[in-house]
Image (tube, rainbow, N blue to C red; front, top):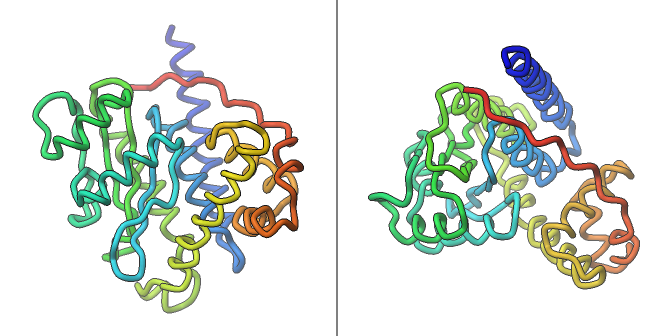
Amino acid sequence: MTDDIHQIAGKRQALTAATFVEIVDALVDDFDVIDVLTLLAVRSVELIGAAAAGILLADTTGNLRVIGASSEQIGLLELLQIQNRKGPCFDSYTSGAVVAHASLDQASPWPEFARESVAAGYPSVCAVPLRLRARILGCLNLFMSDPVPLNDQDVALAQALADVASVTIVQDQAAREGAIREGNLQHALDSRIVVEQAKGMIAEHGKLSMDQAFVLLRAFARNGNHRLSDLAEAVVDGTLSAQTVSATRPPPQPPTSRRIG
């Protein structure tokens, strides 16, 4: 039993290190924000033991928009927060602090969100701000399938991942002084629309779910070393056929991990 725990902890430590390397490697002049934030969501689920994750990013007017989600269902829950301006991510963004609720089926400050989240199978939630120094860019929202809180170690890891990923939204000297490249933020938000359109085309052609279509789109981009947003645009404008992407071999699923602590 002790050996198993040590083995799991070792794998988690290795994946954590690899994740930070992946995110840092994305810090190049022509990086793809959508792909990096998708990586953040996927790795957060794998590393922290969350069941799902979503990412909200503020646009140039300060309004939150869904930029990434581990499933369509999570995307809808995030939209609910935006529409009602109530929920853990909204509170985390406005306060700049971690906002968690371990048991949404009990008294919750966001009754409508809590009801929908519990109905979807996520009775526990933890929202972590995406921040660069004093500027809050958005929020990483972690959903758990059991009504238990994340431990301090998991929350710290989630915040570290969020902080490093936030750096991918800035590039020049002005960014290092604390300013945000608004054009880059807006590009990420606009690219998300194109990605959604491409997912829909691939899903319709291959008779797949939107989640399955996104997995294939991302796999095709990575296999060919393409930017995710550029590839999505090619599908939408017909340069690349949805049939070609839907025929992509899906990547192997990561082994199911058990939580430590």
